[in-house]
Image (cartoon, rainbow, N blue to C red; front, side, top):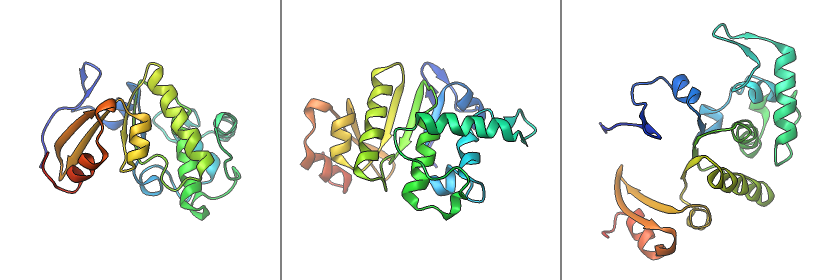
Length: 192
């Protein structure tokens, strides 16, 4: 079992619940948006409202007017076309589910973004839009941690690339020091 501490800025949040971490400005684009970032049985509009004002406090009572208002707001700010708001999310393709989750999460103002494979399954135009949003967040006040295996994406977006192999850091490179062959070797278990 891996051990360690989790920090958001200078505050340790290791023992905080996910809700408490989110309340401190953490936004997460999950690795598997179907399993971990959405509710397939719900409509697109409900999924767009999960992180916002469509729910009443801790009671999880639905407020339909607020759900619609939030969904329309997120859809208006989305950098790409979203499927119909009344469609059941579970009937959509993986790329469309990814768009819904990205539109919801990247519409939030955040201090810390953890994004796992955010452009996986997206068309070229959507990929460009997501990458630009990540750069905008990074250039603004947010800290962005991007997890990806796409070296071109990493080189275009990251100030530093850290390579993991079997849960351990095996290399770290500043953007101007990136050697694609070396990174590939480290990703597959080669030595530094």
